[in-house]
Image (cartoon, rainbow, N blue to C red; front, top):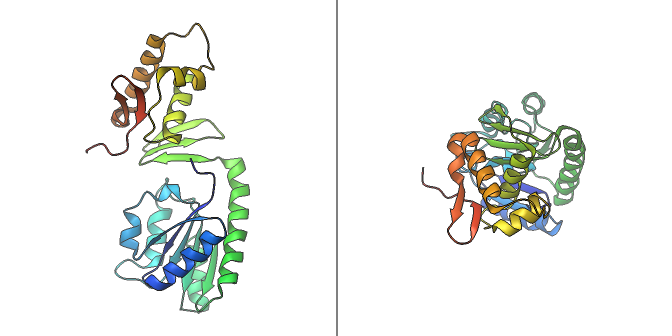
Length: 232
């Protein structure tokens, strides 16, 4: 997993998106862009540490998109900064009522945006240290600090070994791990652990994950990995 902050800019002004991406990437952030709320909602939004969200867009406004995010347990805690040309007190109140972390009126200076982004990330990162760092895939969610797992909002009871296996695979999506690597990373080279023990634990983990168990795939002759491109 990339330890740098990952941001998503959602705005129907393509030039503005490009300018924001260029300048924010120069500050060391990983930045993606979407030119509509519809496009943004097709992404796995749980991977982002902050959304910069335009208010006035097409069919789905920034305010409506924020409501959608706040209604989902998986996305309700993602920080949002609204970007808007509508500089009215009512709009600002609406934005903060929806749970926005900041509200920037257009036209704005890039320096101002960067300072606001840093301030929001500083606040939310501090909060995250106590509530948890999350790794998510669709409805599968790991709270790294609390060592808790949820599947579609329901808590899932895993053993410590099962938790560490799931963590290893989710943190390294698409990477194939041999049994020797899994032994080293999860069992810390316990000489008494056999290949069969690794296989049994992975089989049990798959079963507990239900519909998500199929994403722990086997590469014959090589090992196991988390495959996100499974056909539905």
